[in-house]
Length: 223
Image 1 (cartoon, helix red, strand yellow):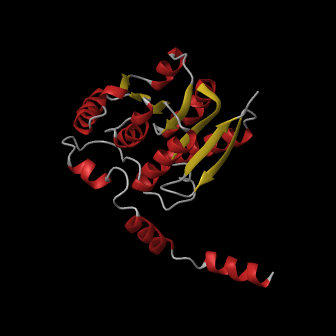
Image 2: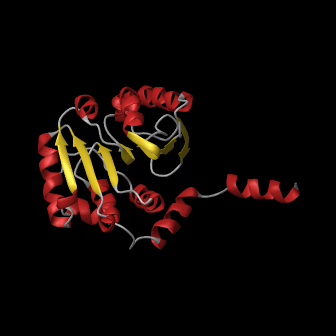
Image 3: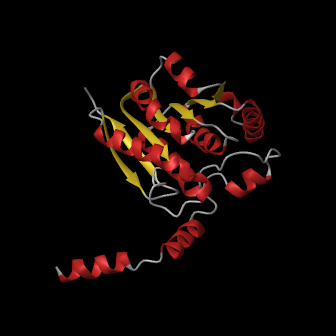
């Protein structure tokens, strides 16, 4: 019991900024460098992309699951898309990525070509609420990083499109508890609703990991 209390005190007193700096320094040469990717992107008016630790986590999950079919909802300039594509291209994998903004999608396409992965990425431009119901194939992994107000409305379609034992990853799910820029506060209620909905679902098993701004990891249960 004494050892356990000492361990818990150590966790409580942990300097997470220092921890993050240590981890980033260890893995700074792994995966797609976020700063370089953004610097090489000419179009700058895009919503924030995932942090580099989330990018590495996406790649790790793809390796663990040996995934070959990926659905990404919310492309932006394609940083996370390229990270995943680099991982699954050796397995002859394919990615369908959905982006609402045509201008941003055009920039993402240019980035895919520059990164040498455009041949395995299919960009679907339009409203995810309309595109997802039109899909019939099943996916090994679905990455949800779109307008947070769409998370709960899209949850049912995400579960439908997942294979059994398929993985759903959702970004930014710790918005309700992190030190969030005030301009994003209007999205907190939507994330709260999604978090409660995914916990209540009997079709998936999930947890939230405290990386980036929070990543929900969910697995579709076997029937």
